[in-house]
Amino acid sequence: MNDKLSAGEELTEDNVGEAAENYIKLADTDGNGTIDLEELKAFFAKVEGASEDVEEIFKSLDEDGDGEISKDEFAKAIIQAVKDKDGDKEEAE
Ligand SMILES: [Ca+2]
Ligand SMILES: [Ca+2]
Image (cartoon, rainbow, N blue to C red):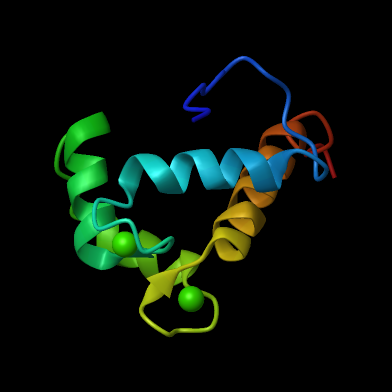
């Protein structure tokens, strides 16, 4: 089992699927391969303390609104986050 999660590794659209899978494994306590709101809440509570925004974050991640964050949805969110980070340089416009 590969539970390595290297935070320093650069994420690209090629490897983001794998990264998303790793993150989902961390939060997916019932092991069904997707993250529901309760799992996300528990995950946030673990990594950065309880956040009131978890429901908002969940909604923004759950693009198709089925109440679960799939690997693909998570991957898109990671790509977006990486793009936002990279965008700092170009935000002059
Ligand atoms: Ca789950
Ligand atoms: Ca979904």
